[in-house]
Image 1 (cartoon, one colour):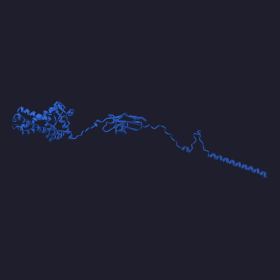
Image 2 (spheres, one colour):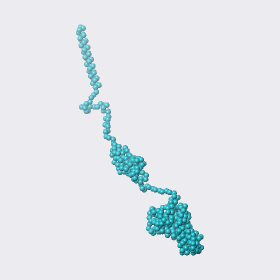
Image 3 (cartoon, rainbow, N blue to C red):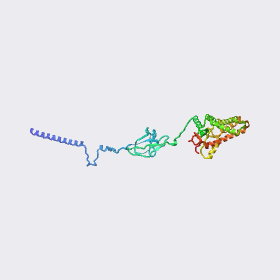
Image 4 (tube, rainbow, N blue to C red):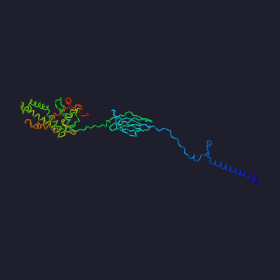
Length: 378
């Protein structure tokens, strides 16, 4: 009985163990199937993608094209003599004239526009008082370092204004010094002719200085001696008599008339009426216009303000000297007729002297200002 039961229990236990093992192996196989990841192959193109894979975004490929190369334009600014110009404005322009950048030229005259993109540019150079320079278009290539030929700019002639400013005192003194050196054939004074049409007016001091210089010149004494000798020879003013006494009286009267006429017409009245006592050489135009100008200058004077006026100085000077001569000429020669005759004679002599000044004396006068040609524009 016992022997029979023991094998049965063993068989039953074996069956139970086998059953348990079978169940365990089946459960384990299902569990492994549940956790094994699904693989996708190229043979299944229509297979659905996992949710995580379908939601990921593609990464763009990096751009392998090269960046544009940076270029520059350089140059040097000079003047027409080849000297460098510092601080001149140099402007970078587009072909349509739009200003992109402005730089000053350096101490060596150089300028540079760097970091430029390839394009077409122009260079413009300008400076106060100088002509503006604009270059031809420059087609700048990638990475190019473009050097312009030397840029030379010239002075703008129309913008040049030269003004000479000097003291009236200094200019007037210089005019008197020039006049005192003017002598016909190096001997006879030609003090009251100016060959500078734009000569500045004389000051009162210089009018008197030149007046006394003229009447006290040695040649003036000789000229008066000649006049007195001629009067002596033709027995003019017979009341004076003959001999050395008569000659002395004639000489004294002639010198007094010469002195008063010159001082009054060249210094006193010109100072009172603010007129210039000099003759302004015309030197241009035809003979008729120059002759008319010379004769009219005995009656028309230039004022210190540059305007033309009646020549009060010369006319009043001549007639005043004639009137004063009544004090020393013989009684038989005095009166209104003497004043009228001498005044008109002296005025006519001024007109005749002006004709000689205009047509003869310039070529004979030493120290005359040869580079000046009288009135401009005729």
